[in-house]
Length: 101
Image 1: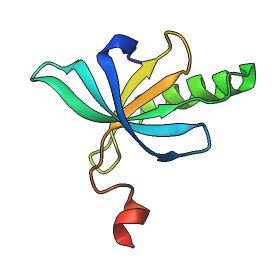
Image 2: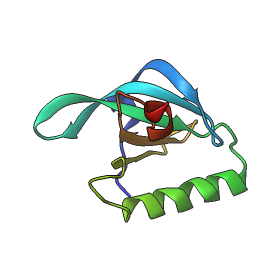
Image 3: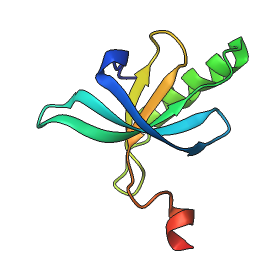
Image 4: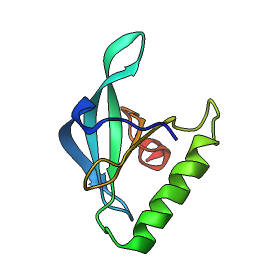
């Protein structure tokens, strides 16, 4: 799992809330060599319990190995401090369910 430094992530606005916690639109610096910054979706972990942290790390491991052109790209995690963060490709049209409605 790629580790992303917290100071490279700048939250812009809240996009919604999922089972783990809130999801934000963010700018991420130094993630891609060809671009200084890119827009990403950031998923935060609201529950800091041991079980929630284990689930977070397990999901990150699974997502690292799940790569396909039709699946949102998972870039990595930020585990420096709280909340724990997962960083994903930003889909400007939202999720597929929202897009199809």
